[in-house]
Length: 176
View 1 (cartoon, rainbow, N blue to C red):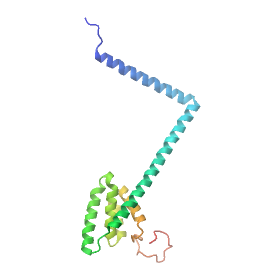
View 2 (tube, rainbow, N blue to C red):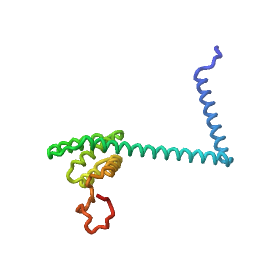
View 3 (cartoon, rainbow, N blue to C red):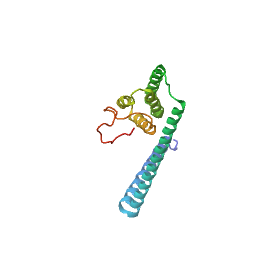
View 4 (tube, rainbow, N blue to C red):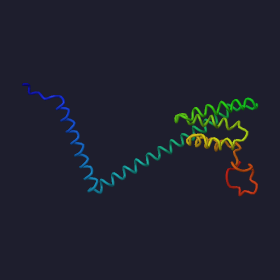
């Protein structure tokens, strides 16, 4: 007896109107994109502007990460490293354990690499340890560790497969 409209009918009508409006706009946008050369040019310009902004942001973030890496290495070097053999062994095991735990979380890759770097500083043959890290650690951690090693010129990483000297070599490669 009541001539009132049900809430479900109102909701369906609203959803239908929104869907029809969206489809009409999509058809209009597609038609304009196909027929208007100025509109196409504007879309390309906007796309290039967005790509350029993303590239600049990525470069800025990379520079910020390099600064953070260098600051972390400087801070760790200021703290110093153990010199006694037993202290080095304990320190090494602690740092490797912490690094392995931190390497599982993407947010702590810098901290993990810093732990591995600290272990590398007290290990007697850093080149061998780097080869082990390369096989067992996630690539982002290895990349950060490589930045740390490159920044710290005091690590004797040398060549990985040779005798550590430049005997008969061309001189190309990592300089000590």
